[in-house]
Image 1: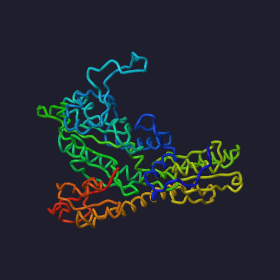
Image 2: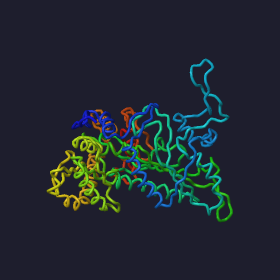
Image 3: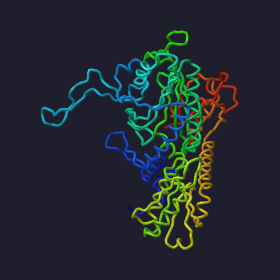
Length: 496
């Protein structure tokens, strides 16, 4: 391993896109694959995703959902049953047309052979294939509600890709539920949106705006789509999770019916909802600094890393003993996650690697510290990681408080810059356009009548309508875009 450098080449202020990719590289989260548009998620990046999975899976099960798995391949005929759905995803679908390869007659290599009777779509989302199963599983109102979640991969043929944020293949969870009434489906949609909000804010320390998507941003085939939108350190919005009220659209397409208590056959009401590995990108852009990745303690696979400065048996044994004491602590109803780094690299290189990987607390223990019972503590969540020589007993006594301070500090910092990017004081479309042309890179919240389209001059500036917040943030009574009475607010931003 080469000697560590002190900073990334790019900074957030000078080149945000390059900085983002450098954070991924130096934190060893992922790399580009030989497959166009795909990425290899490396162990540290996947460990972060596993932390997300574990917390979300617990929340899903606490709200009554169970896990299942459905096929990766979807017959084209099933996709075609839902017209709006297929239209919305058609350009992104990967299609399998053959089931084997054979040697070319001219000896030039392998060529497709064995054409399929019906092409298979590689899963872009699973409403249609899951709906086919649900139509067989559900017969009576007694079978409802049906609350299913799936952890899976999906494929969407993206023209422009960026690691974690938009790749041809990515990992996610997708919930699919079936209900007897419209009201119950609406309650489920709202409940899962709240699960995502609480997870984003409590675990990822990522403040979000909860709102409803406008028609052009709505999930194809849904009656209503709700979302959580996060604001990154460059002022752009990131859709961090969605919850869809599908009405009876997919139930009719898949013939999901049930006999109600009166014996009448009814079409069911369905929902779907999901988050993906895009959240890893969101965490990077929410918290990282010019030294690399920063992770909130609730998310970090290792909350504390102990580094024996000297790799002789006595120092390593002391480091392991300290780690054991730290693992005996509980933080937020779980044991503290501690790792001892005994790899055969020099201590500064090992320390700097964990700085760039974003571990909240780094403890260094050297041979000279054995007699004094001291160790060096570094707090990574601070912009300039500080070092403090403390008694090991003090580190153990203060560790839980320090982790809580880290989580709170990172939340406060993310909330402060998010709020600094929000502006709700514009009085006209021209004023908004002039601000963006003049270098404003934040988010607009404006009174809206619920119907007015995006003004052309704002669309030309790459702004999009992100959502209508569930809670109004302005007091304006006149729509900024039409002059009609305002009924809600609208969030406008550039986005990922």
